Image (cartoon, rainbow, N blue to C red; front, side, top):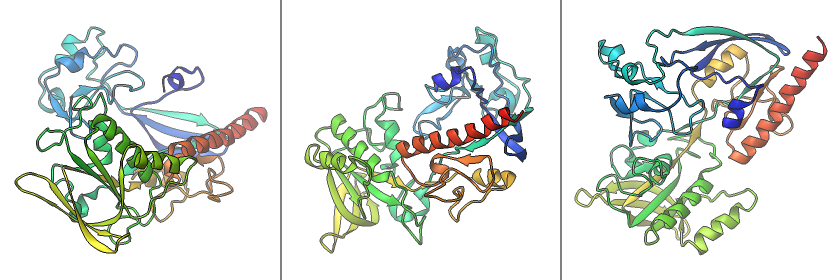
Length: 375
């Protein structure tokens, strides 16, 4: 990201959103609104003094609500550019007209409470959509007990727990007791491949990232038992099956072909009793765990609808951007000069997203070059 930010031909617009698009390939007019961060981009050095002095603590989105941040903050440690922003909805000055501690202590005098929204229009030859994804919220599937039981987590919440910069500084602890777990169970396809509760498609990456996380857990806690409950193990990429074999044979990760029916919490110990259909053995089984990790479906973002409307491009029944042909023209939309890449086009892993991004960039560059050549 730093390399991208420092490139002389790349202009990075943060805190910005697309409002309108007009024109056609080679001559698009894109109206962009830049929202105020109330910090001067040119003055802020990213020293962090303002955040240290700020008295307001709120749940951190980056830590999935398990840690805290301040009302003036940097979205995450490696944010680009390294500039803080003020959360207008949490800041005491904007809500009550008091405080301004950040302004008082900022050594660069970068705080500006009078910043306003700015509008700008860009002339561009082509457009690439790369809006990413969001997690399915499994709270609506009551059987799993997410948000009802403290020891039921999402996979992304687990990622933050075992990360050195996370809320527990990389120490794996159960939320209910702050003790090291003895047995952890991953549950696959939570909201994926579900016709009644969730989405019918496979999210593509869950089996592999669950395996990666299971290996990390075994490295953190060698005595901790790790189970992965799955309907079908879909590890289709190059050397993916070897990775799973390593987890199973060398790391002793236990893969169970089972479909979870219900999770019940022991009110005394806070242990979780998982009742599931053992598909391989054709019977109902139970598994007790200290921690349950849900691997939720991955979905297109809501703002895809707004972009599709202003660009006049199509969305499929799930909300992903449609392309002319998913096999032969996977990055080209029905509007010439508008391309897509990554998960906003459909489920895929990082490697495939990067490949698709290269293809989209090449197609966009073709139009830019032909526009310049044509005068």
